[in-house]
Length: 306
Image (cartoon, rainbow, N blue to C red; front, top):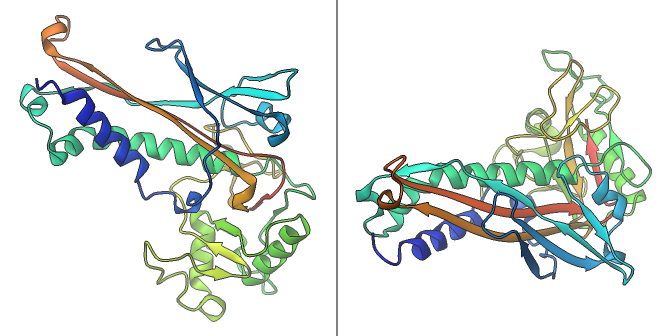
């Protein structure tokens, strides 16, 4: 095995995770300016911890979130410390031929499934974390009405209409959303509803080209739907991340102003055991661990449509 195997492969995996174009709605959100402290390095209980000013966050937003397990420590000097979410790949077996050399094509072939699993989980959790817990004056949650004509799909679900979007924008502005910086990540059904409304949206939605600026409608930058959406109960309360589905659950469309969102990317670590030192499995074993967190600073500047 080449001596530079660990560094070259790890650098490529970090590049692929950082550049994964799967969550454009998080673009240009500034990373928290906080150093990372590693505790329990190399162990199963390893954590990435950051320290920030307590004035930056509403502590209850961290403690009561139902996306991440965030143990928060508040200190007398006005600082908070909390750990980032840990995402891990399953161990994959790498052949002796695959570990010889370090071409990007070879690295990507071996690690693609793992890096995809990491990015899918980190962004699904981010979107869930951003979504408000329930309706308040500061975190508006609107239920789609189907508009003046009460439009429904084949299941009886009320469609999201332009009138709904205008009303939701009004509630968001009242709640203090930043004008010109309101982002909307529709669930798949709501995105389809908007795409069907050619009268109000023309081809803005259906003909949007990946990589181009998000179309702006009713004051919202509208992004393509993410593969998973946060779930809400029939009482319009957000369910915990990964909770079992129940009758009456609804997928949420998430809105937010970027300045209300905190994100922090932690370390990405590689674990490799060559076959020569693996008498039990007699295989080259490879796995990755990545740390990340995305949460609202406070219970404001976020909203949802159900």
